[in-house]
Image (cartoon, rainbow, N blue to C red):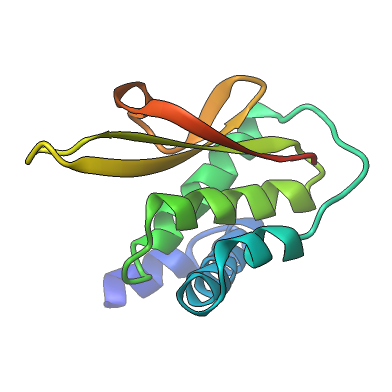
Length: 141
């Protein structure tokens, strides 16, 4: 635990702020997914009219912050991760799209997967190639 606190303490202030924001955004989304139908969650998320092309550095930082945050939130799913990253990117005026697909799990049953894309590039949710694309949850910047 001390090592974790030390590592967090040694981060720059912008990185600390981003991790904290990612964690609380993810926590909010996780709680909402437990108690509110998804269609209402999607409609209530912030949206901005202006959008700009994502910078690789910002893509990396948001992805990193979401991956750190998910390690400290029980039952953070691929949908939770994608929604969190989408919300953070939206606040930076970056456009993104959540895609949902299905594939077969190890027992031969179906398994759903969500991932986040921008300009055709997968940002969050690796291994989307193993899933058949079903649904596009488009969100402009």
